[in-house]
Each structure stands twice: as structure tokens, then as C-alpha cells.
Length: 148
Image 1 (cartoon, helix red, strand yellow):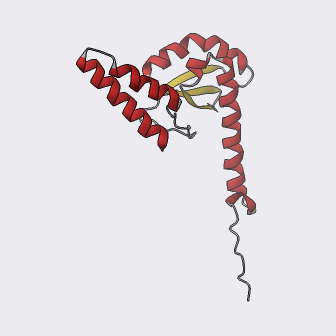
Image 2 (cartoon, rainbow, N blue to C red):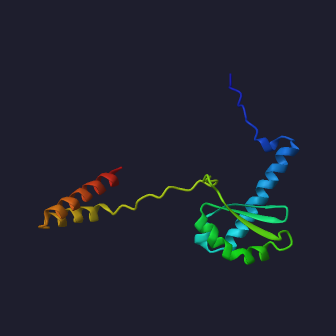
């Protein structure tokens, strides 16, 4: 007897007007966020977490007051890019940082085994004992990490 596969429907697969409305709002906010981020310099754009339009007002959420003050220099550009929909720009600081996009973890770039061995051999020729011990410890740690 074969087991019957059970499938789980996503919430959007149901005929629900409320869910469709909220999904449309989220999509609109994502498009607005990407448009605003393209307008700004990269280092400033990565600190914007959310953008939305409410009552002819563009709300831009950032993670700190320092970035909010930098964003205020771009008020004219933000107004020009959303001109027919928006009359004012308001920049807000998120008190509790919420990350909406998962970011990949950065991994250390380990040197090749030949360079680790060269580091170990060269450290044996150093006369300064604390430096020699530190380099030996470094080469041992790098060798251990590269074997994982």
C-alpha cells in the first residue's frame, strides 16, 4: 500500500481577499524600497529597512540617528523620485532593529596548506620568542581550520 502524500497549501493559494490585499501591499513596499535604495549611495542605502507611503507622506525607516541625518540631505531627491504620490518625506529611526532579509554569514578566507606550512617554517627562524610563539599558534590554528 502506498502512502498518500499530503500537501500543504500556501496562504495565498486560498481565495482570501484580505490576504491578497496584504500581499499586494508588501509587494508595493518592496518595490518602493528597491527604488529608493537605487537612488541613494550604497553605504546609505544598506541602512534603509523599510519604505512606505501613507497619506501623501513617504516614510523611510533606518537603523540609527546618524544615518537618518545623512538621509535628510537627500530629501529633495526622494521627493522628486516619488513626486506625484508624495508631498513630504519623513525619516524615522527604528528603535528595535528588525532585519527582514537574511544575510549570508561571512566566512574567513583561509590560506592554502602550502602557505600555512611556510608560515610555520618561517616562524621557527624568528629569535623574538613572543612573536615566534604567536606565529606558531597562528599556523596551528590555520592548519586546524583548513582541515575542517
